[in-house]
Amino acid sequence: MADEKFQVIVIGAGLAGSAAAYQLAKAGREVLLVDRGKGPGAKNMTGGRIYTYALKKLLGDEWQEAPLEREVTREMMMMMTPQTSVAIDSTFSSVNQQSYTVLRSKLDAWLAAKAEDAGAMMIPASTVDTFLMRDGKVCGVKIGDEELEADLVISAEGVNSLVAERSGIIKPLELKNIALGIKHIVQLPEAVINERFNTVSDVGTAMLCVGECTKGISGGAFLYTNKNSISLGMVVDSLSWKNAKLPVADIAEALKHHPSISRYIEGGEVIEYSAHLIPEGGISALPQLFADGVMIAGDAAGLVVNSGFTVRGMDYAILSGIAAAETANEAIDAGDYSRNMLKGYETRLQQSVLKDMHTFKNAHDYMAHTRQVFTTYPMLAADLMRNIYGVDGTPAKRVLGVARETVADKISYFDVFKDMVKGARSL
Image (cartoon, rainbow, N blue to C red; front, side, top):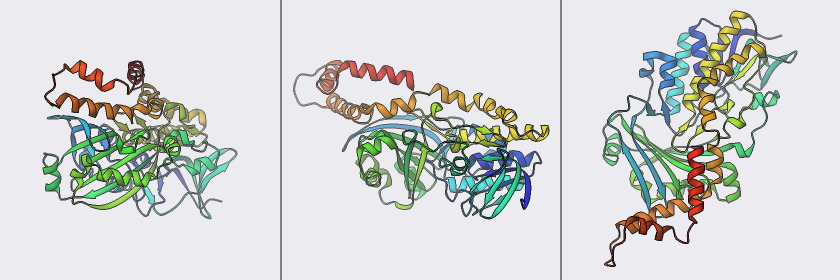
Protein backbone atom coordinates (compact mmCIF):
# COMPACT_ATOMS: atom_id res chain seq x y z
CA MET A 1 0.00 0.00 0.00
CA ALA A 2 1.11 3.55 -0.70
CA ASP A 3 2.05 5.72 2.25
CA GLU A 4 0.26 8.82 0.95
CA LYS A 5 -1.81 9.92 -2.04
CA PHE A 6 -1.76 13.20 -3.99
CA GLN A 7 -3.84 14.44 -6.85
CA VAL A 8 -0.67 15.14 -8.91
CA ILE A 9 2.98 14.24 -8.44
CA VAL A 10 5.48 16.23 -10.52
CA ILE A 11 8.94 14.73 -11.10
CA GLY A 12 11.64 17.37 -11.54
CA ALA A 13 11.81 20.95 -10.21
CA GLY A 14 13.16 22.45 -13.41
CA LEU A 15 11.16 25.05 -15.31
CA ALA A 16 8.61 22.60 -16.72
CA GLY A 17 8.00 20.84 -13.41
CA SER A 18 7.85 23.97 -11.26
CA ALA A 19 5.58 25.70 -13.79
CA ALA A 20 3.17 22.76 -13.66
CA ALA A 21 3.31 22.58 -9.85
CA TYR A 22 2.75 26.33 -9.52
CA GLN A 23 -0.24 26.29 -11.87
CA LEU A 24 -1.80 23.31 -10.11
CA ALA A 25 -1.22 24.68 -6.63
CA LYS A 26 -2.80 27.99 -7.66
CA ALA A 27 -5.86 25.97 -8.68
CA GLY A 28 -6.02 24.44 -5.21
CA ARG A 29 -4.80 20.97 -6.17
CA GLU A 30 -2.85 18.65 -3.88
CA VAL A 31 0.48 18.53 -5.70
CA LEU A 32 3.85 17.10 -4.76
CA LEU A 33 7.04 18.32 -6.48
CA VAL A 34 9.99 15.90 -6.25
CA ASP A 35 13.55 16.74 -7.28
CA ARG A 36 16.75 14.71 -7.03
CA GLY A 37 18.99 17.74 -6.44
CA LYS A 38 19.79 19.15 -3.01
CA GLY A 39 17.63 22.06 -4.10
CA PRO A 40 15.86 23.17 -7.30
CA GLY A 41 18.42 24.26 -9.87
CA ALA A 42 21.31 22.42 -8.23
CA LYS A 43 21.59 20.01 -11.16
CA ASN A 44 20.18 22.16 -13.97
CA MET A 45 22.33 23.70 -16.67
CA THR A 46 21.55 25.79 -19.72
CA GLY A 47 23.34 28.12 -22.08
CA GLY A 48 21.78 31.01 -20.29
CA ARG A 49 18.99 32.85 -22.15
CA ILE A 50 15.26 32.82 -21.55
CA TYR A 51 12.47 34.33 -23.64
CA THR A 52 10.17 36.01 -21.15
CA TYR A 53 6.78 35.68 -22.86
CA ALA A 54 6.43 32.23 -21.27
CA LEU A 55 7.15 33.59 -17.78
CA LYS A 56 4.55 36.28 -18.39
CA LYS A 57 1.98 33.68 -19.39
CA LEU A 58 2.68 31.70 -16.22
CA LEU A 59 3.06 34.50 -13.68
CA GLY A 60 1.51 37.65 -15.12
CA ASP A 61 3.27 40.80 -13.90
CA GLU A 62 5.01 38.80 -11.18
CA TRP A 63 7.49 37.56 -13.79
CA GLN A 64 9.38 40.84 -13.28
CA GLU A 65 10.35 39.65 -9.78
CA ALA A 66 12.27 36.72 -11.28
CA PRO A 67 16.06 36.72 -10.62
CA LEU A 68 17.08 37.37 -14.22
CA GLU A 69 20.46 38.77 -15.20
CA ARG A 70 20.53 41.22 -18.14
CA GLU A 71 18.04 42.16 -20.85
CA VAL A 72 19.46 41.14 -24.24
CA THR A 73 19.58 44.12 -26.58
CA ARG A 74 22.69 43.16 -28.56
CA GLU A 75 22.85 40.11 -30.83
CA MET A 76 26.15 38.92 -32.30
CA MET A 77 26.76 36.13 -34.81
CA MET A 78 30.39 35.20 -35.36
CA MET A 79 32.10 32.95 -37.89
CA MET A 80 35.49 31.85 -36.59
CA THR A 81 38.73 30.57 -38.10
CA PRO A 82 41.74 29.54 -35.96
CA GLN A 83 42.99 33.13 -35.60
CA THR A 84 40.33 35.45 -37.01
CA SER A 85 36.58 35.99 -37.06
CA VAL A 86 33.83 37.80 -38.93
CA ALA A 87 30.86 39.00 -36.92
CA ILE A 88 27.43 40.47 -37.52
CA ASP A 89 26.76 42.80 -34.60
CA SER A 90 23.21 44.06 -34.07
CA THR A 91 22.26 46.44 -31.29
CA PHE A 92 18.64 47.38 -30.64
CA SER A 93 17.50 50.43 -28.71
CA SER A 94 14.56 48.49 -27.28
CA VAL A 95 13.32 44.93 -27.56
CA ASN A 96 10.51 45.30 -25.00
CA GLN A 97 12.02 42.87 -22.47
CA GLN A 98 11.80 39.92 -24.87
CA SER A 99 14.70 37.94 -23.46
CA TYR A 100 17.16 37.94 -20.59
CA THR A 101 20.34 36.11 -19.71
CA VAL A 102 19.80 33.83 -16.74
CA LEU A 103 21.51 31.52 -14.27
CA ARG A 104 19.35 28.47 -13.69
CA SER A 105 20.50 27.89 -10.11
CA LYS A 106 18.83 31.17 -9.18
CA LEU A 107 15.78 31.02 -11.46
CA ASP A 108 14.82 27.42 -10.73
CA ALA A 109 15.07 27.91 -6.98
CA TRP A 110 12.90 31.02 -7.23
CA LEU A 111 10.20 29.38 -9.38
CA ALA A 112 10.03 26.28 -7.17
CA ALA A 113 9.62 28.59 -4.17
CA LYS A 114 6.73 30.27 -5.97
CA ALA A 115 5.11 26.85 -6.37
CA GLU A 116 5.61 26.12 -2.66
CA ASP A 117 4.17 29.50 -1.70
CA ALA A 118 1.12 28.66 -3.82
CA GLY A 119 0.61 25.46 -1.84
CA ALA A 120 2.69 22.76 -3.53
CA MET A 121 4.66 20.33 -1.34
CA MET A 122 8.36 20.08 -2.23
CA ILE A 123 10.70 17.12 -1.56
CA PRO A 124 14.35 17.74 -2.61
CA ALA A 125 17.24 15.27 -2.67
CA SER A 126 14.88 12.43 -3.60
CA THR A 127 15.32 10.30 -6.71
CA VAL A 128 12.26 8.72 -8.26
CA ASP A 129 13.22 5.20 -9.32
CA THR A 130 10.15 4.12 -11.28
CA PHE A 131 6.51 4.86 -11.81
CA LEU A 132 4.03 3.02 -9.61
CA MET A 133 1.97 1.00 -12.09
CA ARG A 134 -1.39 -0.68 -11.64
CA ASP A 135 -3.33 -2.40 -14.46
CA GLY A 136 -1.10 -0.72 -17.04
CA LYS A 137 -1.77 2.77 -15.65
CA VAL A 138 0.67 5.10 -13.91
CA CYS A 139 -0.72 5.76 -10.43
CA GLY A 140 2.22 7.21 -8.53
CA VAL A 141 5.98 6.91 -8.04
CA LYS A 142 8.49 4.81 -6.15
CA ILE A 143 11.28 6.52 -4.20
CA GLY A 144 13.49 3.85 -2.74
CA ASP A 145 11.24 1.64 -0.60
CA GLU A 146 8.47 4.22 -0.46
CA GLU A 147 5.44 4.29 -2.73
CA LEU A 148 3.59 7.57 -3.26
CA GLU A 149 0.25 7.34 -5.01
CA ALA A 150 -1.28 9.97 -7.24
CA ASP A 151 -4.21 10.31 -9.59
CA LEU A 152 -1.78 11.71 -12.16
CA VAL A 153 1.99 12.07 -12.66
CA ILE A 154 3.76 14.77 -14.68
CA SER A 155 7.28 13.69 -15.61
CA ALA A 156 9.62 16.65 -16.13
CA GLU A 157 12.79 14.81 -15.15
CA GLY A 158 14.95 16.21 -17.95
CA VAL A 159 16.52 14.96 -21.15
CA ASN A 160 17.76 11.69 -19.64
CA SER A 161 14.29 10.61 -18.49
CA LEU A 162 15.12 7.26 -16.95
CA VAL A 163 11.86 6.85 -15.04
CA ALA A 164 9.69 7.03 -18.14
CA GLU A 165 12.21 4.87 -20.02
CA ARG A 166 12.29 2.14 -17.35
CA SER A 167 8.51 2.03 -17.41
CA GLY A 168 8.48 1.51 -21.17
CA ILE A 169 6.56 4.72 -21.86
CA ILE A 170 9.35 6.27 -23.91
CA LYS A 171 12.27 4.76 -25.81
CA PRO A 172 15.94 5.21 -24.88
CA LEU A 173 17.73 8.24 -26.31
CA GLU A 174 19.38 7.80 -29.70
CA LEU A 175 22.78 9.36 -30.28
CA LYS A 176 21.64 11.04 -33.49
CA ASN A 177 18.96 13.00 -31.62
CA ILE A 178 21.03 14.59 -28.88
CA ALA A 179 23.76 17.19 -28.56
CA LEU A 180 26.29 17.78 -25.80
CA GLY A 181 26.57 21.17 -24.15
CA ILE A 182 29.56 22.34 -22.09
CA LYS A 183 29.62 25.64 -20.22
CA HIS A 184 32.04 27.74 -18.19
CA ILE A 185 30.83 30.59 -15.99
CA VAL A 186 33.59 33.20 -15.80
CA GLN A 187 33.28 35.72 -13.00
CA LEU A 188 34.17 39.34 -13.75
CA PRO A 189 33.31 42.66 -12.07
CA GLU A 190 30.12 44.22 -13.42
CA ALA A 191 31.99 47.37 -14.42
CA VAL A 192 34.50 45.34 -16.47
CA ILE A 193 31.72 43.56 -18.36
CA ASN A 194 30.03 46.89 -19.07
CA GLU A 195 33.27 48.35 -20.41
CA ARG A 196 34.19 45.39 -22.60
CA PHE A 197 30.74 45.13 -24.16
CA ASN A 198 30.21 48.91 -24.29
CA THR A 199 27.00 48.68 -22.31
CA VAL A 200 25.43 49.58 -18.97
CA SER A 201 24.23 47.50 -16.05
CA ASP A 202 21.20 45.26 -16.69
CA VAL A 203 21.73 45.45 -20.49
CA GLY A 204 23.32 42.40 -22.06
CA THR A 205 24.76 40.67 -25.10
CA ALA A 206 24.05 37.29 -26.67
CA MET A 207 26.66 35.86 -29.05
CA LEU A 208 26.44 32.72 -31.19
CA CYS A 209 29.51 31.38 -33.01
CA VAL A 210 30.28 28.72 -35.63
CA GLY A 211 33.48 27.35 -37.12
CA GLU A 212 36.73 27.02 -35.22
CA CYS A 213 34.89 27.21 -31.90
CA THR A 214 33.93 23.54 -32.37
CA LYS A 215 36.94 22.54 -34.50
CA GLY A 216 34.63 22.01 -37.46
CA ILE A 217 32.25 19.67 -35.61
CA SER A 218 28.58 20.39 -36.24
CA GLY A 219 27.45 22.72 -33.50
CA GLY A 220 28.40 26.12 -32.19
CA ALA A 221 29.48 28.26 -29.28
CA PHE A 222 27.63 30.80 -27.17
CA LEU A 223 28.47 33.72 -24.93
CA TYR A 224 26.00 35.50 -22.65
CA THR A 225 26.70 38.41 -20.34
CA ASN A 226 25.31 38.11 -16.81
CA LYS A 227 25.41 40.80 -14.14
CA ASN A 228 28.89 39.91 -12.87
CA SER A 229 29.82 36.87 -14.92
CA ILE A 230 29.92 35.56 -18.47
CA SER A 231 28.40 32.26 -19.57
CA LEU A 232 30.68 30.81 -22.24
CA GLY A 233 30.21 27.41 -23.79
CA MET A 234 29.57 25.23 -26.77
CA VAL A 235 27.12 22.68 -28.11
CA VAL A 236 28.18 19.85 -30.41
CA ASP A 237 26.10 17.31 -32.27
CA SER A 238 26.82 13.98 -30.54
CA LEU A 239 27.10 11.89 -33.70
CA SER A 240 29.41 14.42 -35.38
CA TRP A 241 31.51 14.61 -32.23
CA LYS A 242 31.78 10.81 -32.07
CA ASN A 243 32.94 10.67 -35.69
CA ALA A 244 35.46 13.49 -35.17
CA LYS A 245 37.12 11.65 -32.25
CA LEU A 246 38.26 14.90 -30.59
CA PRO A 247 38.28 15.42 -26.79
CA VAL A 248 35.35 17.78 -26.27
CA ALA A 249 36.77 19.15 -23.01
CA ASP A 250 39.90 20.25 -24.91
CA ILE A 251 37.76 21.99 -27.53
CA ALA A 252 35.85 23.85 -24.82
CA GLU A 253 39.13 24.88 -23.19
CA ALA A 254 40.57 26.09 -26.50
CA LEU A 255 37.49 28.25 -27.03
CA LYS A 256 38.44 30.34 -24.00
CA HIS A 257 41.81 31.14 -25.60
CA HIS A 258 40.63 32.08 -29.09
CA PRO A 259 41.64 35.72 -29.70
CA SER A 260 38.07 36.68 -30.58
CA ILE A 261 36.82 35.33 -27.23
CA SER A 262 39.71 35.69 -24.80
CA ARG A 263 39.54 39.49 -24.81
CA TYR A 264 36.07 39.31 -23.28
CA ILE A 265 37.00 37.01 -20.38
CA GLU A 266 40.60 38.07 -19.71
CA GLY A 267 41.31 38.22 -15.99
CA GLY A 268 38.12 36.38 -15.09
CA GLU A 269 37.84 33.41 -12.76
CA VAL A 270 36.05 30.22 -13.82
CA ILE A 271 33.60 29.61 -10.95
CA GLU A 272 31.49 26.89 -12.55
CA TYR A 273 31.95 24.15 -15.15
CA SER A 274 29.08 21.94 -16.30
CA ALA A 275 27.97 19.63 -19.09
CA HIS A 276 24.52 18.59 -20.22
CA LEU A 277 22.73 16.56 -22.88
CA ILE A 278 20.36 18.49 -25.13
CA PRO A 279 17.48 16.96 -27.13
CA GLU A 280 17.86 18.23 -30.70
CA GLY A 281 16.16 15.57 -32.79
CA GLY A 282 13.20 17.84 -33.47
CA ILE A 283 9.60 16.95 -34.15
CA SER A 284 10.43 13.58 -35.72
CA ALA A 285 12.22 12.42 -32.54
CA LEU A 286 9.53 13.35 -30.02
CA PRO A 287 8.69 10.58 -27.57
CA GLN A 288 5.20 9.61 -26.51
CA LEU A 289 3.90 12.70 -24.70
CA PHE A 290 1.20 11.04 -22.59
CA ALA A 291 -0.17 7.69 -21.47
CA ASP A 292 -2.71 6.49 -18.93
CA GLY A 293 -2.02 8.51 -15.79
CA VAL A 294 1.06 10.40 -16.99
CA MET A 295 2.25 13.33 -19.14
CA ILE A 296 5.84 14.07 -20.24
CA ALA A 297 7.02 17.71 -20.22
CA GLY A 298 10.07 19.88 -20.95
CA ASP A 299 13.37 18.33 -22.03
CA ALA A 300 12.01 14.88 -21.19
CA ALA A 301 9.58 15.41 -24.06
CA GLY A 302 12.34 16.68 -26.39
CA LEU A 303 10.82 20.17 -26.63
CA VAL A 304 13.86 22.06 -27.94
CA VAL A 305 14.44 23.89 -31.22
CA ASN A 306 17.83 25.06 -32.54
CA SER A 307 17.00 27.27 -35.51
CA GLY A 308 20.62 28.23 -36.10
CA PHE A 309 19.93 31.78 -34.92
CA THR A 310 18.24 31.05 -31.60
CA VAL A 311 18.08 28.06 -29.27
CA ARG A 312 14.68 27.59 -27.65
CA GLY A 313 14.10 25.27 -24.72
CA MET A 314 13.36 27.08 -21.46
CA ASP A 315 10.31 28.90 -22.82
CA TYR A 316 8.98 25.65 -24.28
CA ALA A 317 9.53 23.91 -20.94
CA ILE A 318 7.39 26.51 -19.17
CA LEU A 319 4.69 26.31 -21.84
CA SER A 320 4.62 22.52 -21.56
CA GLY A 321 4.30 22.79 -17.77
CA ILE A 322 1.35 25.14 -18.20
CA ALA A 323 -0.28 22.83 -20.77
CA ALA A 324 0.23 19.80 -18.53
CA ALA A 325 -1.31 21.62 -15.54
CA GLU A 326 -4.32 22.78 -17.56
CA THR A 327 -4.87 19.25 -18.82
CA ALA A 328 -4.46 17.86 -15.31
CA ASN A 329 -7.09 20.27 -13.98
CA GLU A 330 -9.55 19.07 -16.61
CA ALA A 331 -8.78 15.43 -15.79
CA ILE A 332 -9.24 15.99 -12.06
CA ASP A 333 -12.57 17.74 -12.61
CA ALA A 334 -13.71 14.87 -14.82
CA GLY A 335 -12.24 12.16 -12.59
CA ASP A 336 -10.72 10.67 -15.73
CA TYR A 337 -6.95 10.12 -16.05
CA SER A 338 -7.01 7.95 -19.13
CA ARG A 339 -4.91 8.40 -22.22
CA ASN A 340 -7.99 9.60 -24.06
CA MET A 341 -8.54 12.43 -21.57
CA LEU A 342 -4.86 13.40 -21.51
CA LYS A 343 -4.62 13.81 -25.28
CA GLY A 344 -5.74 17.38 -24.57
CA TYR A 345 -2.13 17.98 -23.46
CA GLU A 346 -0.80 17.37 -26.96
CA THR A 347 -3.63 19.44 -28.43
CA ARG A 348 -2.53 22.38 -26.29
CA LEU A 349 1.10 21.94 -27.32
CA GLN A 350 0.05 21.87 -30.97
CA GLN A 351 -1.08 25.49 -30.59
CA SER A 352 2.35 26.73 -29.57
CA VAL A 353 5.41 24.56 -29.05
CA LEU A 354 4.72 21.84 -31.59
CA LYS A 355 3.78 24.43 -34.21
CA ASP A 356 7.28 25.91 -33.93
CA MET A 357 8.83 22.46 -34.03
CA HIS A 358 6.98 21.69 -37.26
CA THR A 359 8.24 24.98 -38.73
CA PHE A 360 11.85 24.00 -38.01
CA LYS A 361 11.44 20.28 -38.58
CA ASN A 362 14.46 20.15 -40.95
CA ALA A 363 16.74 22.45 -38.96
CA HIS A 364 18.59 19.69 -37.08
CA ASP A 365 19.23 17.72 -40.26
CA TYR A 366 20.62 20.82 -41.98
CA MET A 367 22.85 21.81 -39.08
CA ALA A 368 24.10 18.26 -38.50
CA HIS A 369 24.85 17.38 -42.13
CA THR A 370 25.99 20.61 -43.80
CA ARG A 371 29.62 20.42 -42.76
CA GLN A 372 30.67 23.45 -44.84
CA VAL A 373 28.80 25.71 -42.41
CA PHE A 374 31.32 24.80 -39.73
CA THR A 375 34.46 24.53 -41.87
CA THR A 376 34.53 26.11 -45.34
CA TYR A 377 32.15 29.05 -44.95
CA PRO A 378 33.81 30.63 -41.88
CA MET A 379 37.15 30.45 -43.71
CA LEU A 380 35.65 31.99 -46.86
CA ALA A 381 33.99 34.78 -44.87
CA ALA A 382 37.28 35.67 -43.18
CA ASP A 383 39.24 35.52 -46.46
CA LEU A 384 36.64 37.63 -48.26
CA MET A 385 36.70 40.40 -45.67
CA ARG A 386 40.51 40.34 -45.57
CA ASN A 387 40.67 40.64 -49.38
CA ILE A 388 38.06 43.42 -49.48
CA TYR A 389 39.88 45.56 -46.90
CA GLY A 390 43.40 44.66 -48.03
CA VAL A 391 45.39 47.23 -50.05
CA ASP A 392 48.76 46.13 -51.45
CA GLY A 393 49.28 48.53 -54.38
CA THR A 394 47.96 46.20 -57.08
CA PRO A 395 45.02 47.32 -59.24
CA ALA A 396 41.79 47.33 -57.24
CA LYS A 397 38.96 44.93 -58.07
CA ARG A 398 35.22 45.24 -57.57
CA VAL A 399 33.70 43.34 -54.68
CA LEU A 400 32.12 40.72 -56.97
CA GLY A 401 35.51 39.97 -58.51
CA VAL A 402 37.11 39.67 -55.08
CA ALA A 403 34.33 37.30 -54.01
CA ARG A 404 34.84 35.11 -57.07
CA GLU A 405 38.58 34.87 -56.46
CA THR A 406 38.00 34.06 -52.80
CA VAL A 407 35.60 31.20 -53.56
CA ALA A 408 37.55 29.81 -56.53
CA ASP A 409 38.97 26.32 -56.00
CA LYS A 410 37.58 26.11 -52.46
CA ILE A 411 33.96 25.12 -53.11
CA SER A 412 31.80 24.93 -56.22
CA TYR A 413 29.19 27.60 -56.86
CA PHE A 414 26.63 24.82 -57.17
CA ASP A 415 27.42 23.56 -53.66
CA VAL A 416 27.09 27.09 -52.30
CA PHE A 417 23.74 27.52 -54.05
CA LYS A 418 22.55 24.12 -52.84
CA ASP A 419 23.47 24.88 -49.22
CA MET A 420 21.78 28.29 -49.42
CA VAL A 421 18.56 26.80 -50.74
CA LYS A 422 18.58 24.01 -48.17
CA GLY A 423 19.30 26.47 -45.39
CA ALA A 424 16.52 28.82 -46.50
CA ARG A 425 14.04 25.92 -46.48
CA SER A 426 15.23 24.55 -43.13
CA LEU A 427 15.92 27.66 -41.05
